[in-house]
Image (cartoon, rainbow, N blue to C red):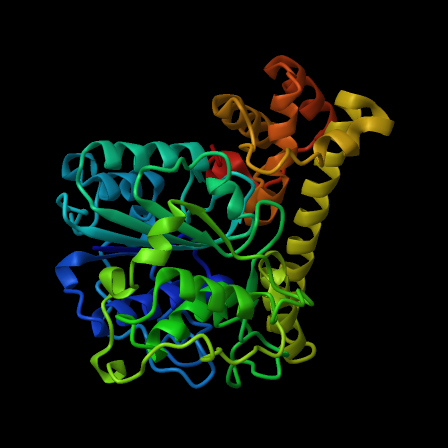
Length: 437
């Protein structure tokens, strides 16, 4: 079984749906049947007015059309936390919309999950509110294990601070092996972006893929996965995503759960393998090509808005609209950052505010002890200060630390109201767009 999910929407997030569409074709070429592949994608990219090639999605500059033949089981507002967790549990009765396909697996089945999106400490984005919180995901995986409905499960996660989703939360003994694009404290990276030496074709103002995702996908497309273990792929992807260990850009690919699975199991158990690669015996000396540069995932929307502005004709309404959009994006970032900084000062004083908000717990500990507190504090922030948005998810650690030091909800509400006199309107309003928790 394979569950593939892109948790974002908008043309500026092109890369997430491109990653997922590419993953579908990797699974199909490997021999997985359509009835065993479940795809979540908002589906607003292929025929978007900004797509220079309508009906086509590519995941690399010279790549094939990965949108072709993809079964879109859950699209638009059906891409949500509720449906995703119901699909994992095989619970058809809990679904709201979509194709109705669920992971109807048995005790001898192998499950692969790939999630590509924005994230933040302890949280993964969704195109519709609310976001997916790490504790809810791990509880669902534990429940899946308790039902005895799989033999082994592999989870590949592309998101900023993705290590925080499993760190201190995913126990051993569930027959689950997970790798993440980044550790618990850093962003993941987009690739094949405008201004790269190996950038997208003319007309694209957005990144085509994510560095971790295209690394495992391009490795899987090139090798005989019956001879390559999960551990071997982990090392190859880690090397490429870290720019050969230099970390000039890129991130620290991490692994969690039952690490013995990665050494014992060949990738073909989860993805199959392309028959054309059967004669390609895997060796550690089959490196992936390096990428010329990459873009911090959190800045990819800014890059997209900037390129739209830069290429719009001078004096045109298009230029004016692009300028407004760019200023809007930058103003929102400034507002979220300043609001969180001010809340820290009001709660803990000017001297200690930043130190407490930015504190990182020792390795192996979860982000927060009380996940209900975290959700409650997020709602309080968004009620007074507007949506965190995909950019503001970076501040989840700050909100978690407010919980960890024992701040009461009444105090948080009081200082948030002081810090944010005006609630942002339009797309940055939680009242209009929904809450992250």
